[in-house]
Amino acid sequence: MPYRISNFEEYKSEYQQSVSDPEGFWAEKAENFEWRKKWDKVLDWNFTGPDIKWFSGAKLNITENCLDRHLITKGDQTAIIWEPNNTEENSISLSYKELYEKVCKFSNVLINNGVKKGDRVCIYLPMVPEAAIAMLACARIGAIHSVIFAGFSAASLSDRILDTDAQIVITSDGGFRGNKKINIKEIVDQALDKCPEVKTCIVLKRTGDEVKMISSRDKWWHLEELSAGKEHLSEEMEAEDPLFILYTSGSTGKPKGVVHTTAGYMVYSHYSFLNVFQYNKNDVYWCTADVGWITGHSYLLYGPLLEGATTLMFEGIPTYPNAGRFWEIIDKHQVNIFYTAPTAIRSLMAMGDEWPAKYKLDSLRVLGSVGEPINEEAWHWYSDKIGKNNCPLVDTWWQTETGGILISPLAGITPTIPSFATLPLPGIQPLIVDSEGKEIMGNNVEGNLCMKFPWPGIIRTTYGDHERCRQNYFATYPNLYFTGDGCKRDENGNYRILGRVDDVMNISGHRIGTAEVESAINEHKFVVESAVVGFPHSIKGQGIYAYVICDFEFEDADKVRNEIISEVVKIIGPIAKPDKIQFVKGLPKTRSGKIMRRILRKIAEGEVSNLGDISTLLDPGVVEDIKNGALV
Ligand code: PRX
Image 1: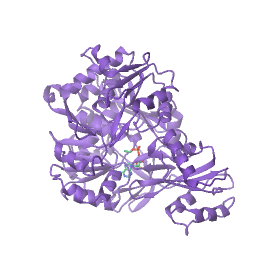
Image 2: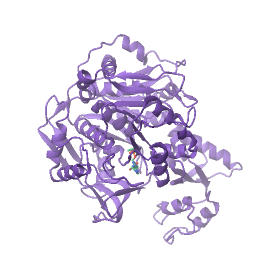
Image 3: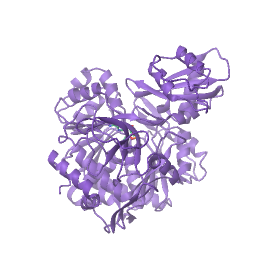
Image 4: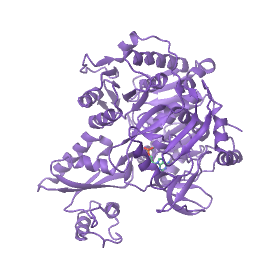
């Protein structure tokens, strides 16, 4: 059977095989990799634990598959093209051989600094090649990387460092982002004040600005390299050894550390990359996601490198120095496959058609979308103005927890439908359930999206708290993985994702829990209580609407609003800034004290005339007050 699917008939027969004999199916796919020792058993699983093991008994190192095995055939081929934020700076190309050498050297830097197999290493870096090098070096020595998006605040960073018990952090002096310079080291210093266990901080020189270095703890990356050897034989890992931890928001409490393990993640990230994007030899592939998110892990780094592809990494933002930057980069590097988020598409669409019209964009062959539902208008604009109606557009649905794409067209193979993720990849068995967990059979139906069978890239646990993993994903509906998303299945079995059905918002493709934002707002000295909901936003997909009760009379509401926003930025980061803050006297609560968010969501959406049944509220009068002061 083919590893790379080449037509729709093949997709259908691969899909059938993957369902009738999943173990045989994945064992055959796994033959495409280098193993130090092959597996004893393809799959052991139950969703009650959950306890999921893929390729038990196998031994391998993922970086041998990303790097070493390409050296003979593709040593001189470009692995990473790096495009800097500032157009005056030159882009960089690293061949597979150069990347391999840099990863080996940095592996030795980590070892020289006492990092061992199983240790957690926090990476807080801008989008520079060293972020990829640091991740791969961790994987090479068997350390578990935990990359934290460099837009997160010091408080978010320290929470994540403490949660993983990491003793080492890799960062930079600063970073460039549009016309701003970010003082990354300062943020790390603040975070590390709360993390006494961190004994080492390796600092990359990026901006060259002067930064405070604490001699007992902080070491320059380039100086550490001077004393590091250049050879490194990768560590032998078990199939289920953790590869990385990546934090993501849920509907309750603090973000949780999603754990992915070595062999299954490797097989799934590569299989899905190759089949969804239909990567051809010598293609230049560009995924715009930051390495701090799962898309950056699976489809900027691991998936493409496992294929021996050329992957482009961009340090900057789509609108700097102007709204043509993405399109300019596509022409400059002759990008063939372009993968980005609907929020970027919508913001560039709003800048006008004249921007893409200035560029040829004729190297493009495949377009991708990820992170949030793509509305039909943005889908068509992307397809027409960027793809010139000549590129299949794959709307890829997946999650941090799924490790890779689960539902998506295969480029040029699966018929696309605007704003539909269409069909499951081979190996993926979705089902739709009602709120009681009963399967809704047939087509033309709508409900909650679950998975009934594991795939190799599925989450294994949440770091340090397995029960939380069970509760969050496997307890809502017995024996099913619950995605937290609602969806529709059309008359032909195509899936359309409708968005989250839990208290998780999706702001510009970033997942943020309402509870996290509320607890940050509540830190403001005037605030007694708050309730946060998402509302439709033309660029961000969803915006954040906060209803806030204060115990203090004040004159200048905007001043207090700005203070609350600063509090949220300080505690979480700029991505969680509320767009609207409405001061209210009370919140709609049931007699048992539960906030009825349904009502708040409707008001935030401007649907004040259709609030449904409010008779179960403790004080229905508060709804009238809120409606009168609504900011819509
Ligand atoms: O609601 C879905 C939405 O993003 C959530 C996952 O967020 P995260 O773990 O941060 O991963 C984002 C990148 C994979 C999902 O539960 N989502 C992701 N992709 C799509 C999407 N919603 C609709 N269509 C998509 N293509």
